[in-house]
Length: 217
Image (cartoon, rainbow, N blue to C red; front, side, top):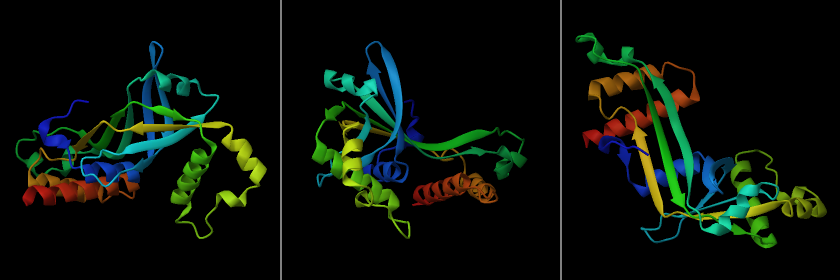
């Protein structure tokens, strides 16, 4: 990924937070002579070591041929897309000085690199899908649990999937959130984004505001 220095985000805690906030990712790997892309939710597991990039765990259908390539030691990358939004040059106060401003797009992304391995273990899969559902059901008043479904049905579903684990060897983060603009222009972007009744725009406004605070320190 092309990352100009001023857009490069290297703080592991920031990168991990985006992965946890936007867990549905594009997993890109090579199957035979072609790149293949699959879309699935991942769980991030991080150890106590500060240098630990973490590992991603997920699952795919046994009918999906992608998992058969995992035993070949192929490299792969998982792309996590965070907040993103169109940025109008009309939001820049500097536009009034000669009009030298054009539209752009702000976004935050993380690329997690690593070699996947398959996990064909019933107990591992049960623990994984239990953790995955518990994580995404926890905000519901009546969260669904694995035990809500008949045991034989769950066993049938477990036999239909295969586990994927990707130890992360390298994390890349690109935060294109108006760092290349003046503080006045960044504040103009924040104000412009907050005019929209749109979650993505609000999320980007928060990122730009946070970056503005970091730059000022």
